[in-house]
Length: 220
Length: 286
Image (cartoon, rainbow over all chains, first blue to last red; front, top):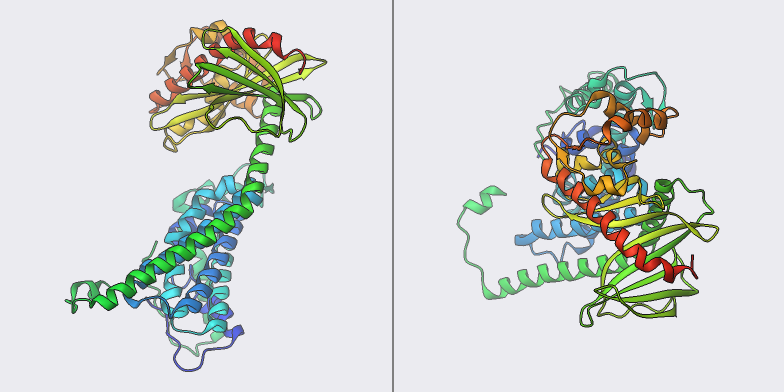
């Protein structure tokens, strides 16, 4: 995992949130959970709903792990993390089915898959199991927001180009570039947006930092 | 992590083993408690929204306005007594009375009574399915009957909507676990609208073919399903040619296509026979 551990005093809330959105954006920087990011982002609304679900699961799981870390035996920590994630995913799954049935019908299948999202378990192992409550909460929030933002951007990009609409409202007649609505187009969209992220970072840092750290993720 | 697995580790002491088991047990118990609470908190809303979806699907299938009355008839089997109970009440009612009619399996009337809607049916009764009767001015204006058929893997549940003369007006798949892209394609509008407009007699003799569907028929079915302005006219124009032909199967999903056709056939057939028995006893509640 290419995540930097944070030795010494934990960073501030603002730093942690910005870290999740930019420096360690789960999709564009860590390249984690790309498959679901491609699967659901044919429209911006699907991306939004799954992003919100991931945000909740990440924050709730991180907080649970940091509160219960003394009770979790190190030898079985990964199974226990999985149980914690699965509990929160099921809770959110049930809530969505009850309160947003129309949206749930579209993304329900993917919500259940959040259990296996690499980004969530990696934050539990890397951050939540080592840090106190407050920084963990903001780290989870930042990572969740980073993922949500990434899904929103990919969704908007693909829906605009692939279906010629935004949030279901048709903007152009027909489908300008259907390719982007297809799965292969999803990966190209992520690559293009990743390049944009790199470019922005290069510009804002103005050559202060060296070359961007490689983002060698290979999770689900 | 993978390295940890490969490296030999000192065997666990009994004390540590107990702690591991405790750690996992506490996690599982706490998780189960959270899920139980969430379930109790959301179940009511989930059921209410499922009912609302069902109600609007029924109205849509029959083309009803919001104020047409809908009667729900639940059907139960009394295993010991070899009897079938029909319990009729306005759809979604939580108060008032339900009318219960009991028949023996060979169709003889065994009893009839009014019971409060709030009183649940006996635990020994096995649910057999439901049907919905839309009424206008005390006469049936259409039926939606729930049917079930054996799909490729698990049962497929479907709704068949009929005119008072049992001509099919719509068909929906409400539950299927067949594979997306193959068996699940039977829920596609172009497939399910093939049944629409066929009479009960035609449905009884309906067959399935693996021939490709004519393009114009497919386009007409899709337009019809999308409620396009010219949809009904295009559908009607081609129906005369197609109604004598079999149902066109979904490519690669002949078993599911046959299962749905068989399900529609059985549902219509059973309902027709039941309805003649049941209708005289429902006059008071329609």
